[in-house]
Amino acid sequence: QAQLVESGGGLVQAGGALTLSCAASGRTFSTNVMGWFRQAPGKERELVSGITRSGGSIYYADSVKGRFTISRDNAKNTMSLQMNSLLAEDTAVYSCAATSGVVVQTIPGRYEYWGQGTQVTVSS
Image 1: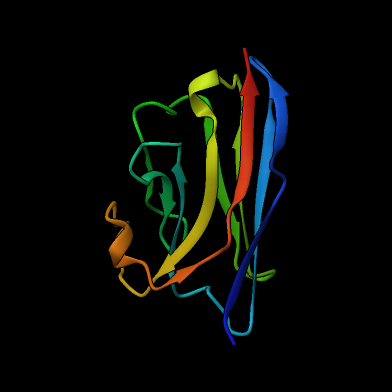
Image 2: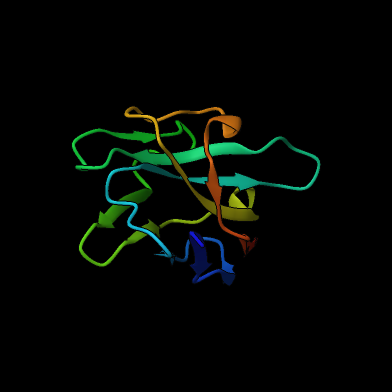
């Protein structure tokens, strides 16, 4: 059974850094576009960053450009999100997801596979 599992969330002070990891199992996701979504209380789920299967095309939400870096290792079936200069407004549950599409999708419904999410809390 295909599974995505996130790790690396936690509590950090504003200005700090965290690295989220997404480990895939059950099947290879090397041919899938993958992304990191987040959902804060009372807000809609939004795409933070997405990466194509080769890593040749990367998307960042405007709110995280210059602060977050997405990467993937197809050989290890993993994806990461390096988050620097964290802000209180980055507080959310972060989930990794994968889609069979060939381009990065911003709509959550386009992703077939989801992890359970990991909480990131940034204190101001």
